[in-house]
Amino acid sequence: MNRQSSSTYAEMPRIPQLDGLRGIAILLVLFHHCTVVQPGQGGMEAVLSRLANIGPHGVDLFFVLSGFLITGILLDTKSLAGYFRKFYTRRALRIFPLYYLIVLVCVVVLPFVVLKVPAAAHKVARLVSAPSDWPWYVLYLSNFLIAKQQNWVHPVLGVTWSLAIEEQFYLVWAPIVFLLDRSKVKTLGLTLLGITFCARWLMLLKGYSWIQLYVLPWCRMDGLALGALIAVSLRDGSHYIRRFATAAKWIAIVGTLFFVCLYTFHLASYDDALVAATGYGEIALVCAAWLVVALNALPGSTTQRVLSSGFLRTFGKYSYAIYLLHLPIRAALRDTVFASSRVQVVLGHGILWQLVFYIFSILAALIGALLTWNLIERPCLSLKNRLAEYNTSRDASFQLLGHSSNG
Image 1 (cartoon, rainbow, N blue to C red):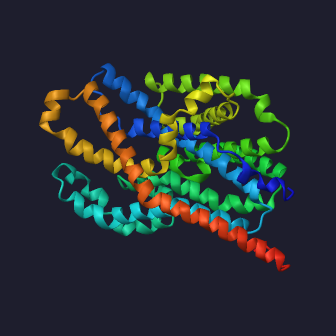
Image 2 (tube, helix red, strand yellow):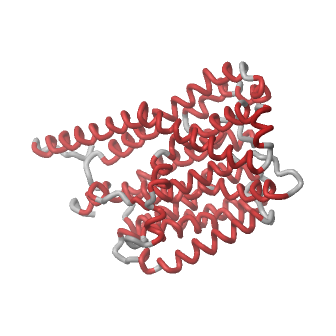
Image 3 (cartoon, rainbow, N blue to C red):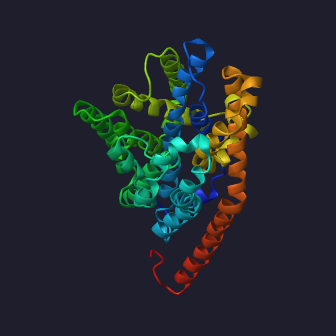
């Protein structure tokens, strides 16, 4: 890659459809976690409860997007000075501040606060494990802790399993992209698809639980690998992405409808080991197809207008904070306001109660994300921008002095 082409990412305009896809991903996760009504003997509550099983696959969409965006950044900057320093510093400033604040609160503060809430007393046993488990969370190894315990361990920090996988991906993928040319990155991506499929089946045959297949990194590489393959294909001059745009649309639509029907009619569930072994690869493919559809959406088309809507882009912009905050917010609302007898009298405890709960819990999660964005995330991102300006000036000075700027 020459020096001119390596600046592609810096000059590339932001693609609003990708923010929309990220918004869909976080809304799917919220749909799953905020569906708390008891399914009972049948009716709409049961249908809603089963349909909510599609929600965890919002994480698969996040994986595909991460594989695509991170690989694109790495490919476009690999010949620039300070490749590793800039990439890891920018990732740290984007991810660490809010993450470690949440971990600190969960380890130090939350166990004592919950003791004061009678409705949440039954969760104390799960919360008190955090002070002893903190190294797993600090080192982004919570997915291994969950696999070891074969449960989510912590009611708030359980969601960090997917963030742990992404951090593990960042750690190893940057050196790989730096050392390999595009064709070898593509070959490796295809190889990872096969390795992931075989790993899940081998673990299934060995008797591992569904949750272990769900959270261990070698079982969840297909989404990241497919995103990486799309990023490489967009840059190799072969126009594969445009050539298969029509096929991608059919895969996205038919695949989505297939899994929605599968879960709605209770023919399968995401938390089944056999589904994990056979279906997670297909789910990743459907998510990758939606990414291709978004990238090929023509200006003014229905797809482009929907994915670029302010509603989806707002949730996409604040998705990281929403992901980390929504479980404690959901629990607080469910165990206090929505557990009150007055709410039960007005709304009952069925489909109306659930619909109102969706609105309040999702809105509260968004408000919490807006607060953390302005108080924590945006100030840290401004540091990232200032760091980029500093590094540009520093590298230019090194070049003027005749020094190598690769360090």
